[in-house]
Length: 363
Image (cartoon, rainbow, N blue to C red; front, side, top):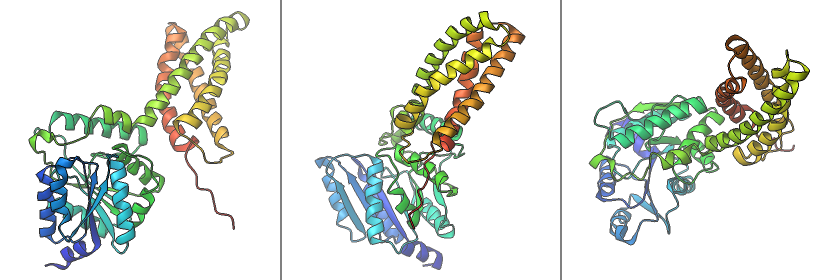
């Protein structure tokens, strides 16, 4: 056995979350043992009694540690259960590799991401699939491409495969991940966001794209789970939409009132007054319900209104310029411009205004 392979086997633990698996899980575990892995954790995430025989067969192997949830709690919780066991029992390892139970990850690719982590212990290693191939099932191609594009747009992190289950995670980062929110598939996305918060570089390793029986065993629903994954964004858009309706209503009212007083500046004045009133509502909803910014931060409201002032001026000047050039409905112009600005606002609020800060310990 080569020194490189021996280093991987001695320093990497394997974690496999499983819910209602079939015999592909047995094959995967058998292949891992044959390859020489001696520390393999499998989490039974509340599978039914009809799957007990599969888990009993796996649990009988001395290289395996079976962790059981009495009821289904989601992939995120299963990963946390596995991380907790790993941290308490395998702290001497360089890191842990997570793999899916449905046979999508080959032993060769598991070895590849393991080696990359050993060479780069300060990074998160992703085993990324190529979704441009024609043999990829539609729901898998659609779900993964959509989430990757959305993730790049909203989070500013360009990753080709945001939903890969093959990930190599250092021991230190695994400890940080115990405090990351998410109980189901959204946890894997929050893991990537935590990399940005902690300035951890994400490194992608190209792996084989393996789908068995059109990926029917996957529990990922590309519509429902994508909505859960981007729940914060949808909450933000709902908050923005309500504030937007309030802002438009007030703008319509004040534009008519101010037009009679000062025709030259009525658009800018109506924008300022309506935005101040609607922003009071929007600030409280975003702070408490959307981003759940509970950390004491006396500058958060100052950052929020600095952003509001900037966007308000951009909106007012852009609407004014567009109206003077085209002379169309001022309300319609404002709807279009503010819709574009709302995407910008989300990214700034998430990454700057309501960003969680660390509170220094008292000396």
